[in-house]
Structures are given as structure tokens and as C-alpha cells.
Length: 296
Ligand SMILES: Nc1ncnc2c1ncn2[C@@H]1O[C@H](COP(=O)(O)OP(=O)(O)OP(=O)(O)O)[C@@H](O)[C@H]1O
Ligand SMILES: [Mg+2]
Image 1: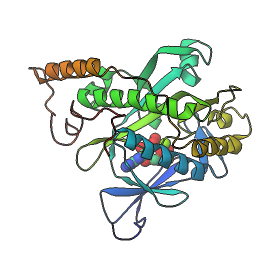
Image 2: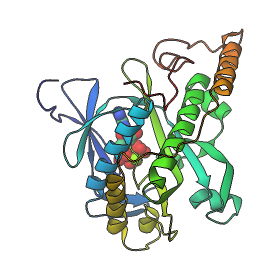
Image 3: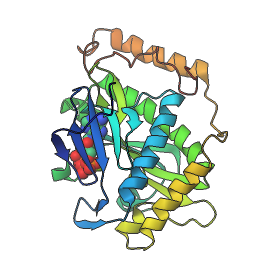
């Protein structure tokens, strides 16, 4: 790329970020703001320097996830508040991964916050602010044309791998990853990539020693010390960068077996039509390297 890419037209302004076009139409610049919202924007405020922390945290974690084998939109951090990412068409299905009950999940099922969830729960939500991002199942996502089954399968597998990585990554920083939200998108080449951000806005993180909340719940619930908690998360991630992680072992043979079996089924008579081209199998198939098998 020649020189520093410059932000051109503002394509989108969300609650936490602005998205700018660049001369190269395959990329966008994301600018992180200090604005904070909760409860579907019914509560609004600002958190001083939040944009700087979230940009830094997200840039670090996306670079690490990419090295771990997860395709992401991340290209490079450009400044304190900006990063250059591949432009994707966002799949309007949010993926929520829950290791312990918290927030709306605890309310919905009438259980205590902190209840350990075994197995880990992965939920799909329709990314639609006007409808308050309602939860939905796979059939609903497919029937409404939001994603196809192969995309959802790939998103599910990536989410599990990302959970393994991030849980171990936050653990070395003495933080427990309680739950988090992911967004995926399809890039110009038709490849599914992890997009959006991973930060204390999108993860619940509890201090291992004290159980104290170190994330956006401090803002949602008026707990005070919001800026300090965000800064502390960043400080700990920075200090622990490069430390060995205690990642769970994967049963490789079992994984391959399951995956090939599922693809066999999809190759049969009832295979969906979209096996290639944008949104299809490109980049999603059984050939993708297992995260953790470094590809450098
Ligand atoms: N690589 C990318 N290419 C294009 N759009 C992206 C990319 N990564 C994230 N986005 C989108 O950019 C927007 C970021 O803005 P922000 O996080 O502030 O949105 P938001 O207020 O959460 O609203 P919503 O996500 O509901 O649109 C989101 O709509 C997100 O889906
Ligand atoms: Mg957002």
C-alpha cells in the first residue's frame, strides 16, 4: 500500500465507531469513539478514552487471533483511534458465546449470574437494533435468508476456537471471560472473516481474584470506575502479551471426522445451492487449518 490510507467518505456512524471509505474499495478505516450506549441505546454516555482502549485491545487481539488461524478483517492499527480493516458485508447474525450465565441470559432463564455453563452456550441473534437483536435458531437464520447453513457452521466453529483462545488469553491477564459477542462478514474475495471488535464493550470480563466486573457492565449498572476498568484490562493485556497460553487440546481426528461427515451430507441431494462464490464454501471448507496450527 502506498503511504498511509486516508479516510474519505463516512459510510456509517454507529454507537461506538465510525466507518470511513478509502480510495481502495476493499478496505475501510474504523474510528473508535468514546460514546457508550446500553440497553439498545436507551442509556447513553461517554467513557473517557474508551475509544483509544478499545482500538488498542481489538487490534492486539485480532492480530493474535489471525496468528492463531482465525481469518479476521484486521489489517493494521493506524493511530490511537483508527484501524484499517478489510471491508466486509456483515452477516446480520450476531454470535454470543457464554461460559457463565450473565446479563440477559441470567434474566431470561431465572438463574444466578456466574452460573457455570457446561457445555459452553453459543447463541445466534438477529443483528437488528429496531427489534432489539432478538435471539433465533439456525432454521430461522436460514429461512429468513440471513446466512446459509455452511456459513453458520463455520461461524459456530470459529466462535468455539475464538472462545478457546480468548479464554486462555484473558486468563494469563487474571481475567475470566464470562461471555462475548462476535460479528462476521464476507470480504471482497467471498471469504468469511471475523469483523467488528473485541473489547470490554463486547466481552464480560471478571477479575479472577476479586470477581469484580471489568467491562461495560460497570457503565450499564452505574458501578463507577468505568474508565479505570477499561484501562486496567488494556494494561494487563499489554503486560502479558507473548506469554504462553494454556489452550485446551483438540481431538484432531474427532474434529476431522465430524466435519467431513457434515460435508458429505451437504454434498447430497439436499445441498444448498450456494457452494461457491460470495457467501459460499470458499475459504470455509474442511481444508481450513485448525487454529493453533501456526501457518507462518
Ligand atoms: N470490516 C468491516 N467492514 C464493514 N463494516 C464493518 C466492519 N467491521 C464492523 N463493521 C460494522 O461497522 C459498524 C460499527 O459501528 P458500531 O459498532 O458503532 O455499530 P453499532 O452502533 O454497534 O450498531 P450496529 O452494529 O447495530 O450497526 C457496525 O455496523 C459493524 O457491523
Ligand atoms: Mg457495535
